Length: 76
Image 1 (cartoon, rainbow, N blue to C red):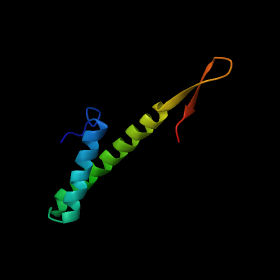
Image 2: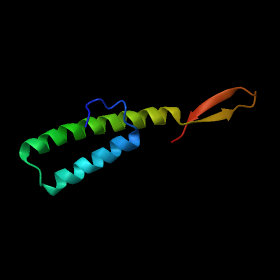
Image 3: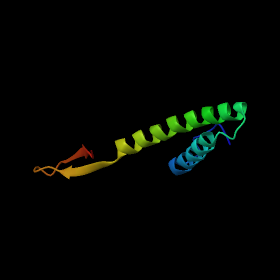
Image 4: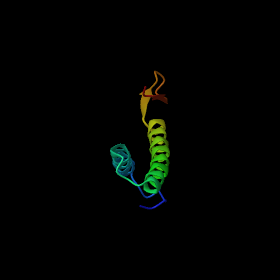
């Protein structure tokens, strides 16, 4: 488990976050392990939110105007 999240894909980060949440929900970890897991989970959540925001900014529809110029519309 590396602190550098930049090498993780969104899917890998989300999968790791889901495992952390599951482990925390079971309550089987020692207190210190749970705190470290929670910190990692918070990092992963922020990273996933950042990736989703970046993807949302990129997901646009190219719309051809009447004058043949191009415009973009954000998908909602």
